[in-house]
Length: 258
Figure 1 (cartoon, rainbow, N blue to C red):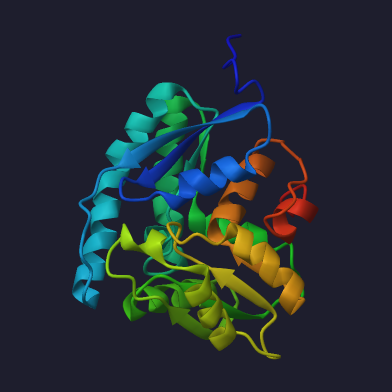
Figure 2: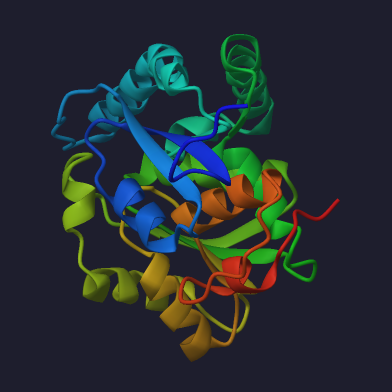
């Protein structure tokens, strides 16, 4: 059996929109020794997003580029494929998300003899690690139409979004330009005594280090989308390493709950 020289534990293909820089950066920060990441892009234009119609167009463009991006990613013969984007994975709620997951997981199985981590399904599995959680505050880089899709998906899986705030970032590239200071202000707006857990969506928004800091400050779980998808990929592939500095999920939860 041939084994990747540096990926002697696992080789992950990381599928991201071509405009995204945060996922690759944050995954490499969290990556344990013996795991290699092969980043591949779903090619989309560097949209300007000034209204909700343009935001929907951006999400649709990612969806249209996904199948070819996945087929391309499978050419490196990965052990697993991580979908490094979130909005398209929970668009229109759980029923559609489940269909999309099954479609792409089947492609990965048929062409690459592997499986995938999908943002929406990773969220469901990660939230099982926090059984007392019912009410969630959410921060995103999205416009309100995107925020509404987050609310719908979480409602479909049994969670109430009490408050949600978005950066309204003016394009997919620009999401990575948002500052920790601005994100902290949004966290303040969604947090409160009525919030059990804070969730961040939008994979090009740098957040994994800030999430760990906020957990200490707020005394409650703060989940970054890039940390929870990477956690899901590691645990799905039997890698139980406790990874410090990026929040309680990676540091404390060594397996996906049944």
